[in-house]
Image 1: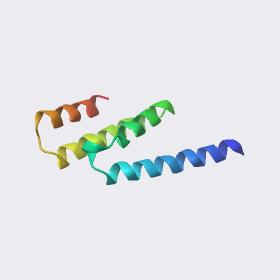
Image 2 (image 1 turned 90 degrees about the vertical axis):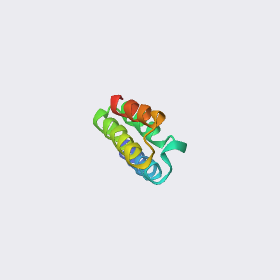
Image 3 (image 1 turned 135 degrees about the horizontal axis):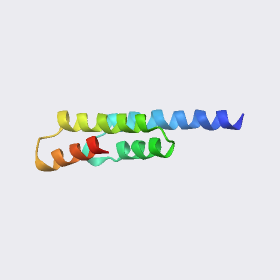
Image 4 (image 1 turned 120 degrees about the vertical axis):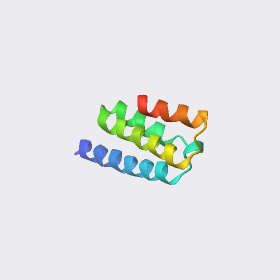
Length: 79
């Protein structure tokens, strides 16, 4: 019973943080990094990779293509 309650809380937390990551400016928030760490800690490496891929794609579409942006994209794709 308690395990199901905790699982539901984790799912709620994940949805809330995903929503925040997608709605806030990439360069001024760390929600994608938090989600990555959250999924790695839970052992869900596929979701962790998906989060970093999404961040890298958003960086390529929403930021100017300067050296800092390219470096951040590379870090996302190599995570």
